[in-house]
Length: 188
Image (cartoon, rainbow, N blue to C red; front, side):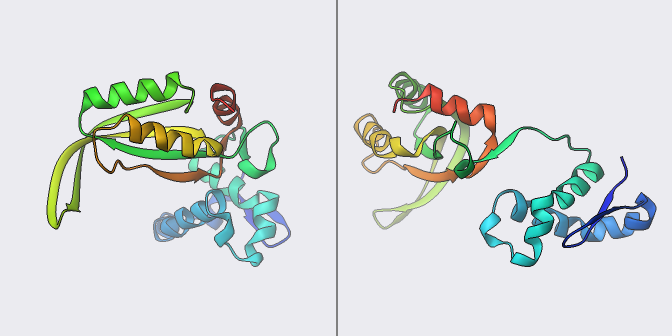
């Protein structure tokens, strides 16, 4: 598949040597990475002059061909009725046992579809006027946005910290089947 050169309204096949020399590719790779972030994850940040290239998929086709990425079924959260607005929630716990117990209770109560446990993190924070450093485990929780309040209350009731971390980030898109699974695996 030949790479594609895109303008604001058209895509034209080019030869790889005319578009990318080794030197040019190395110099422009950070720009390509930044553009990937803008087009794939931060769509509200790009300017209208790029919007037609993004809508036609020319830029993504070029990036996929140069980087060897195959197309997968993805969806933007606001554009699909088979999914629900979803979030990723971070919660830290003091140790492996606390992480296992809390993760299992969250999934059992259908407050989340999945909880990843990431051991071995080190947290540095200020508490009661002193800098503290503690080993912790991070829980990465995937759930519905509508369950955030119930999840927060569950964590507060089942956590040994006085002020447990519960912070959420929106899921703006992803694998359609996975996003549908989050909906199917959580309570309404």
